Structures are given as structure tokens and as C-alpha cells.
Length: 125
Image 1: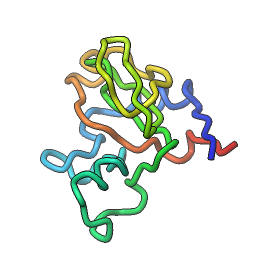
Image 2 (image 1 turned 90 degrees about the horizontal axis):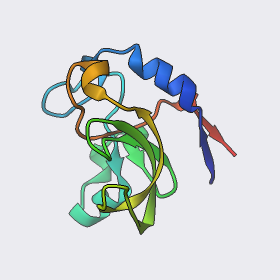
Image 3 (image 1 turned 60 degrees about the horizontal axis):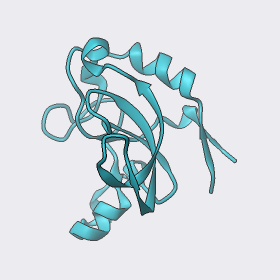
């Protein structure tokens, strides 16, 4: 499947949210932006899928948000192939577009982790 992300609408939505709306297992388990579980991590660490919410599982080819470059929030696409980020780090995702350049300025703190993009901002091709 191919996915298209509405970057401008996503950026406007995210910058209107406070930092506490991002879900995190340790600090905020009730956030509205759901923390993502990547399928390659599930396979590698043998995580029990029955204990996970199906909405938080990101399969290969799907877009998700991650702090990829440092103090940013970028949309990336999960892949089996390894790609090199502009920082030189090699990862199993293809960098799409940076949505929030400065998380400290937008949310008051840097965000660490990866999150599922809300479904209203994804279009299936």
C-alpha cells in the first residue's frame, strides 16, 4: 500500500497540542497521540502482539512520526531496507518530511520516541 500524508494539516494540528497529549508508557499513558510499536521491533524483541492495540502497530511501508534528527518531529516510512539520515545515522526507515523543526519551542520539551499519525492525516493511494 502507498500512503500520502497531509503534512501542512498535520503540522497545524500538532503545534496546537500541548506536550502532554503525546502518549508515553512511562509518563503519559493516556495521551491522544498514540505511541507506535514498529513491526521490526516487535519481531526482533518477540513482543506479544495480543497485548498491543492494533492501532499502534506500524507495518512496513506505513508512515509514522519520530524524533529522527534531534529536537524535531519527522514523518518517516518504515522499511526493511536501511537508509542513511542526513546526520549519518543508518536506520530502517525512509525520511519523509520534518513536520515540527523545534520541539522545544513548540512543546516546551524535546520529544523522544515514535508515534502513530492520526488517521485523518493519512490518505491511501
